Length: 376
Image (cartoon, one colour):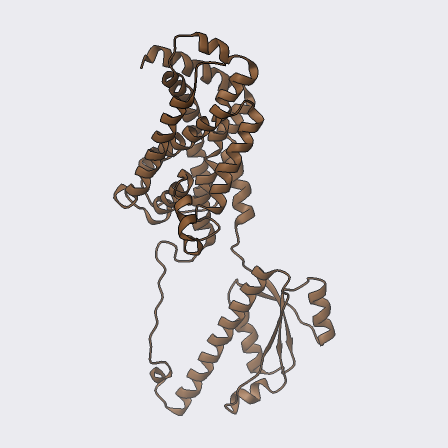
């Protein structure tokens, strides 16, 4: 390894990156722009779902139940239909996602100790919002019924503790409010940070397409020296986008960062090295920049979205799919990013995933050096 020759390639590539605005934007700003775009696109923290209430009972008890439905920011009572025709109109026009119908005799049945009937009509064209409305209406109804039973038992002098023999207490660690974005955004960092690798995939393909590869072949630089000199500038430029992405996650999406900043930055470098090694390996076999970009997008985005646990949990994957998923560095870095961001994990808890990333990078960098031939 002659580092003078490597340094010459590094300077050449760095000049190209800084002078070519397209490459510079792709390496520095594209990860941040993708994180902002995909973060809002995939964020599904549903709140303030508008519902309607058709109160046919018009009693203090029915009004207490309506107040219970609107007691949190999960549901918002905003429509008051007076007939089933109005209910149908509201749902057909999409002016509300669900309607709760309180029939006549609701209070009388509760006071008499009978089972009181309620009806909920939901717009099923949007399953996510519909499911949210059903879950929260059910939870509020159960809470209201629990309070009513407790009140009646207290009036009768019965022991309230006998109402439920199990005292269930739930506690969510690391993400107490169970916000979906707290899990989503750190995982998306692993996907958007693969964009610099897409730019690196153009390194050798560009030399072939522009006819400058012949000049490099004529020099005494070795294959491994050329590959190392190619990867280091893209690694450095891609690393500049890591703090920007982290700042977007922490200050833009309000994601708490619980771990070590130095550890996260170091592991980000290893992840960029691994993805860029794969990208350079691809560029050995393609002759145009367009093909290199399409191939890298298929590999990094497909593995990132569908095989990293971002959208599909590992528990739903078969053994062979899991094995294939862990062959990609994105899968390992998604787990690392979530662990450091949300759990504050140290190197000891995630070292297996770290060594997997390093191994993948070393293997593909070696294969790239062996497969690249200094000839046209």
